[in-house]
Length: 121
Length: 113
Image (cartoon, rainbow over all chains, first blue to last red; front, top):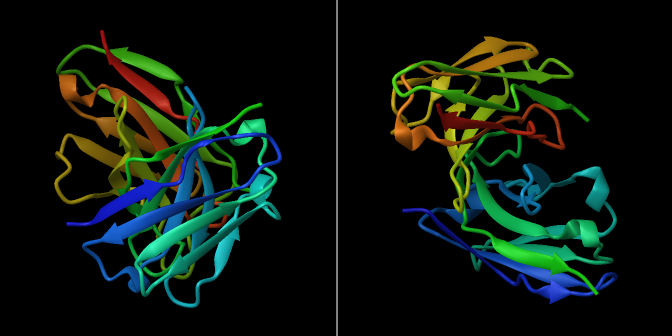
């Protein structure tokens, strides 16, 4: 059974940094693209970033480009999201999610339970 | 970026009746190379992560009840719940995975009338 467990979400001040982790199990991690999706309080889903399973190509939504960095450690089956220059509007539940193939151009078929990131002074 | 819109924002349907949700993309998500629409539908219940229902616009995910169906092509898509059950109360999202960023629609809330 595929399991995705996020960690690292905390309360941080504007301008601060944070690294989220997602530990994956029950799958051949290196074979799949992985994604971060966030959901602000009471709002809809926002695709944030993805990384392919093959060459590790990263993709970002415009609002996080230059501030967030997605990476993966296939030997540890772990996905990361380094978040710098955090803004109040980055406050959200961050979901780790698995794509159905090694390409980011594929549906999301498994989701973690999410980790809460709160940016506030 | 491809902008996804959904209508209605919310709807209330009687148990056993049909619910229909529309999704529109600002650009076609139909690939000419494989003739597939890069469009998925997800269901999110309160306090839970989303769940995949439909992919390639009309292919039902394994284990999803057959009362859920998807249709459409190009820029216009529909999710239909043929006979609404109490457990279908949720927010439904469409997503395009044709071009990054892989944007979601704003969601449609489905309740029982």
